[in-house]
Length: 332
Image (cartoon, rainbow, N blue to C red; front, side):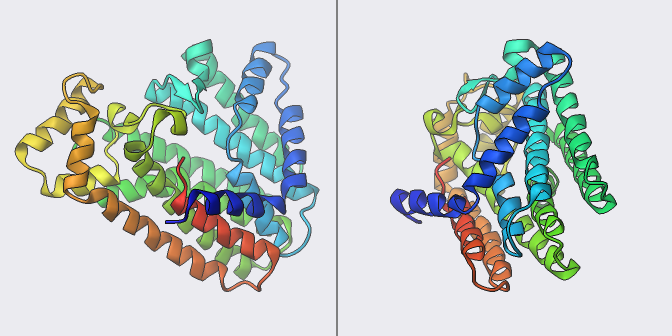
């Protein structure tokens, strides 16, 4: 594992190349988040002020930079993917009955589910409105396919909520649809904005897909190992919301009937009132399932490394390589 100092240096270096572009992206999002209905504008401003890593826009811009300087199209598309990502988070919070997002009350807590859902819908449509200005059917095809994948993933997750018999294949399918597909689309859009050849576009999409898979696996591990202060939301939130993720899937493979009953109780209660969270953590430690999940995540990062290594050495290529390491070794 990298040290925290190494993480911070890598993060600064990786994003330094596109800092100026990201500022333009923020301005683009601000402008495009203004609606004729004041309530939607207010919610959008609240969401943007909540910050975030802006990893997806940075990924898109760095993929463009592999072939030249990011142009207006790349910056516009970077705003589009962040708006789509934000819309999915708003909808996720409503579906999950979440109370916090990035250390602040979630939008559904402040404005209610109805307003939050409609604001998320508006953001989706506005993102497509911005993308439509490029008059590029290939871009729209990528974005439409992406949105369908993510919605299908959300529906599959709803079907599997509060169920203990989730397989590793079931879990990977959800990660593919809900997270990796967006990472892959970001890289593909960055290549398209740069006018890259189809072979390079596909190679970058594959690279980012593996990156996205690793990102979500680590995210689900951190839900058990990190703290609310670092995560910006309560620890153990996934299981509380009825989601059985990879560390728990691995532990359940060898769990006793009593241990399985503990998990069933939390899934039924939707709380840790009868089964303390630390009992689940101890079970994961006993079966070494956290370590096993990290090994699975590292397999995806190794694949991502091998794919980005096929591109010529450049500041952008090195930045993308650093991002792969940051994803695996991050703390939040």
